[in-house]
Image 1 (spheres, rainbow, N blue to C red):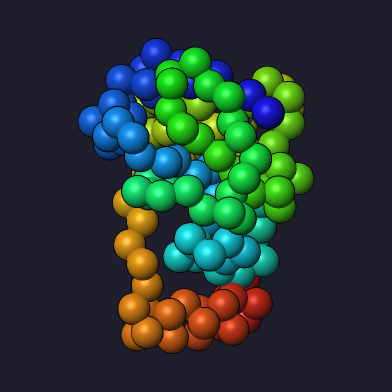
Image 2: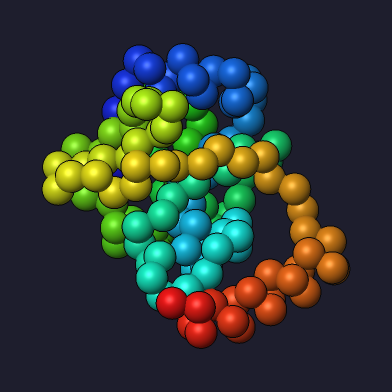
Length: 134
């Protein structure tokens, strides 16, 4: 799978992604382990870039890109990603698009931090409540 990282996005990301880091294109709708959101109203329309020190075996689908980032995604995410995948930076926001149009107009960039038990308990609770929010 390929993603075109446009010049403005590459410039913006250069300050957020250090050399040697791994970047995961992950859903942020409550369905991925990196997600902080939840609820059926966000399914498939909210993405994030997660910057990590190490690979993640669940995120093994390579995203070839022109910026030279080590970027991958997970198989479930590919359901929502079509041909002509691109990342641009406009109006102070990262925008993920494909040939069908805008997938997410406000992609976030987060540095991965391993969850503590307290954070994991919070995430579990958020997941449980997710279906009741929307």
